[in-house]
Structure formats: structure tokens, C-alpha cells
Length: 448
Image 1 (cartoon, rainbow, N blue to C red):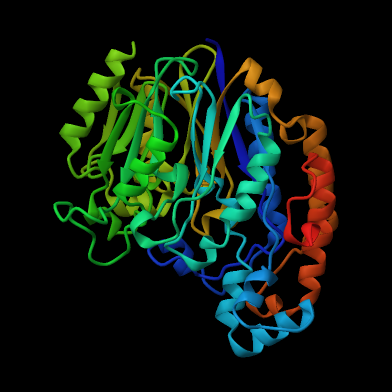
Image 2 (image 1 turned 90 degrees about the vertical axis):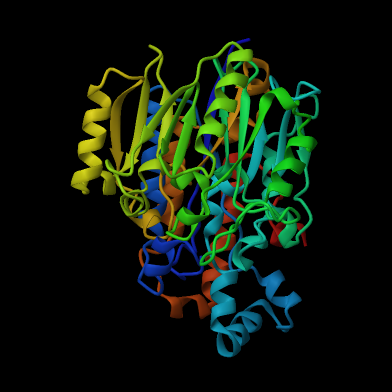
């Protein structure tokens, strides 16, 4: 059956700031308390969407969340009007206000895990919102994420939505950042690779010692069960705990897959040979042939991967069957990484072209091209059932670019988070955005 991969990119929100909130994410930590530029960040993301759309790739848009999250601050004991809540939080616990003001929903690769209809028992596309409970500032996202997904993929004949897993450490779930689907064609049954950092209940699996392993085996297994995936189409692999301790907080910082191709670092998986053999066997049973491209530690060390987000790039299938790799500018700025990419595209393998994007604002906050998008495989019928307002077009780009220009600040410091006017600006922008995208009422301030 004919199907397409549609990349739904997250719009960067009006409160984009560098809070340094994500322990284990070295880029996020090192940028803490620097000045940010929300307007530039949003426009850099929009430019990437437009460029890929112009190249013929199907794109969609996912809206940001309401920030600061006043409802969460109220749950934590701050009272009064919205403005008073913000002022009191800034006075008594500024780090908490910063966490409740994070624009981290821009990382839509963490929004949920998606399984296409070709893989699921009921023949529908399944979504499970990620609980993201490893980090407080992200754990408050899944309720709004679920409403957004339901507004985007509303037809129950084609789409099934599951709530986030229990919000406890044993079921820590980080969404598609630790999930890769390999297949012969997008419409064919595929093999879904779930990568976890630790097991909550089985002591046989080693855990990292310095940084937290955010995804558990038990969470990955639960998502596979919820989506109705059969054993022949699932592989569970443990991320190498040693690379987690070197800043590889998600699998998509050390590996990327698309179609039959898996591009990964030699140190990505704890049991590399077993994982590759199982992937190859299961993909072969589904009519495919695994093309594994290993980047050796001699070619690139982990520090290069983390600093440039080489593997957090988008691997995209072109009409002629070859693939394009969309990388951040930081890859071109690193001589070793750029040399590797030059040799890779000249090698005659499936990856024939590299395109470079300036995403400095998001890179400094700890995410590259792949973090900014959620991949959803859709048949023609399913694509017709998607809310048309969120599908990217030249006209939508023009409207969104103008919307950003009207509503976003061009600089934001930590002290600015204490300004109640930021909440007013954000709500005004998001209220207009829901009309542009045809989402209806999805934000708490619209539901009150």
C-alpha cells in the first residue's frame, strides 16, 4: 500500500529561553542563562520546514504549549491572579518559574511514539503520549500534547490515542527519540526498534553511573503492547550506558534510521551484534534488507557526535530511492564530521546528499533537526483524515512567519520570565495560532 512519511515539526514557542534545565543534555546545560531570541528560533524552524517542503518532502506543524504554565504553579501553592502567581514564583523560587516557562515542547520527537497502520493489530495509526517524567519541566507536557494530537489526528476510524504511561520512574518514556522504524516501503509492515537505557525490574541490565537513563525497557514494552505490535515486528535494544554518561541522553543523538537504512555509531548499543542480527532477520521476514552504516569510533568519537548532533539529523527518502541527510550547521563547522559526511555521500551508498540548516537557537537548547520533528507514516486515506490546517504549505508558511513577527520577542533573559506580560503575549499568540491551524480549544486558558 502506498504511504508517505510526514514530518510534523514543532513550532518554537514564545517563551523560548535557555534555562539549562536538562541534566545529561550537555548543550542545554552549557547554554543556561544565556540570552535567547524566540523570534529567530521560530523562524529558523520554519525555514527548515519550508526548505524540506520545497524539496518535495511532506511536512506538518505542531503547535507549542502555553507557557508559563500557571496551572502547575497553582498546584504547587502559588495563589492569586495569574500575574500574582508569576511574581510570587519569581520571588520565592525562580528556578521553578523557569521550569514552568520552558519551551521544550518544541522537541516533538519527544511528544509521543507513533506506530503506523501497517504494523498495528487493528490497522489504525497509534499514538502514545510520552510521560517525560525524568525531567519536571517536561513531565508537565503530556496533557496538552494529548489534546494537540487529538485535534490533529481526530478521526477514530484511522487514529487511536493512548494516554501517557504511569508517571513513575519505572515507566519513564521519552517518545520517538528512542524509537526507530525500519521497513522496505513506508506502506509495508515494518520493524520497530525500541531503545531503552535501563530496566526498572530486571537487574541484568547495567545502568549509567553519571547521567540518568530516561527510557526504561518496561515503558518500551508497554507501548509495543498498547499499539498491538507483534513480536516479529519489534526489537528491543539497550543503549550503551557508557555513552549516556558522555551526554547521549536519547538514542537519536547516536543513531538514525529510515527505510532499510540504519546509521549508527559503533558505541550506540550495548549488544550491537545481537541487535543488528535481530533487526536484519526480522526485516528480511518482512521483505526488506537491512543496510547498516556503522560510524567507527576511529572515524568519529562520541564528543563529535554530541557537539554536532550528527545523528540527530533527518534521514529522508527521495523520489529516486536515494536518501538525503539534513544536518545542523555545526556539522559543517567540525572538520572531522564534515570529512566523514563528504566521504559518506561519495561512497555510492544510499545516503547521496547532505543539506545543512542553521538551527543555532535550538541547538544551543539541546536539540537538532531530528528533535524538532515527529515522524508519522500515513496512507493516502489517513492523510486525507488529518486536520488540514496543520499540513504545511506555502500559504501556511507565510501566515506563520507573519504570526511570529507579530507576537515573538527578539530577546529573552531569565529575568524576563518574571514579567506577567510574557504570559499575556503567549496566550494572545496561541489563541490566534489555534485559529490559523484549525485546532479548536486545546490550551488550558481556552478551556477554563
